[in-house]
Length: 102
Length: 298
Image 1 (tube, each protein chain N blue to C red):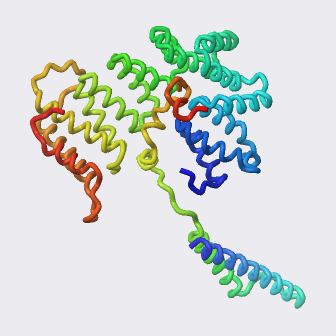
Image 2 (cartoon, each protein chain N blue to C red):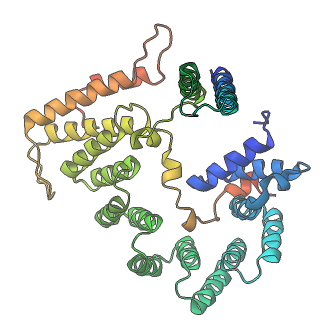
Image 3 (cartoon, rainbow over the protein chains, first blue to last red):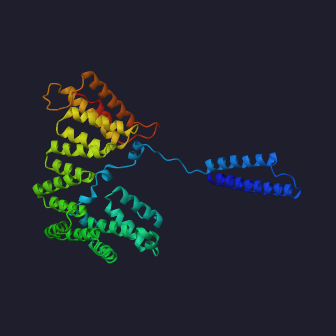
């Protein structure tokens, strides 16, 4: 899903660049013919809007998976051991050294 | 155990363990040694290498690997001379050998700076390890008077009181902890179970229900334990309705208690059922026996 989204995003960018170039070319043509540079052809405008829609579509597809935000869902992943660990007060005189010590 | 562990994965897991306060020292040392043994392991840590060394030092002390701890502490001392955090680490290293010397060391640190939180906590911890409960409790209450919002401290005080069977004082300490972390179902469960042990059943059932409320639709872990607690309380209250209760909480009506008992039974049965035909949830038989049995308040 994400690669498809990225591909669509890149297509939209290319379409936008094409729109920009078409606008530049049309306006320079008008300038060469000494006509007033007050409008852009309709199809270039439509192409710009199409590139916007494509980009939005691609971004939505390329978005990462949604994560849970409720406190209850976060608490589901925790254990009593980590909630009650009290590391600041943890003492070392226990049998851990017998099992794992050097 | 020796699964295909990659260095970035190990570093990520170590960071999570540090952020959440896991006390999984054996695993931390194993993963930390794995990272250290790789060629560019320390480089991949980048800026976090000092936090990593501190985590490794504490974990190594916890499982008794003193050379590894010495190595980490020495590197930290070279990088950060005169740092209070490193001084506390050195104190922890002394604790591993001689507790009395550790007490003197922490007292000198506290003479130099009275608000050294870490050193004060270590002093309290050493006093508890030496079983000097009077001094430990007075130091801890003084600490909590100064630093009220230290959740760890209130939980430790509750644990100390519970270990000497002063359950009502443990409840008071836990109530402060609940003020500091109101949305945490683990602490409400702790409170409810301490209330039950202190024989304050109406208070216990209130907090068991609060725990299930905080857990939402979850039927694993904490919520399941809370439903067991609700069932225990309803059984106790319906079987001994005339027992004198010194509880400050208003008791519930019999119909509510019966309804809650049925709800708890239904929730537990749901928790121990599975939708597929073949898979049986472990423990289902014992739970059915428990739920079906009547006349016992156990």
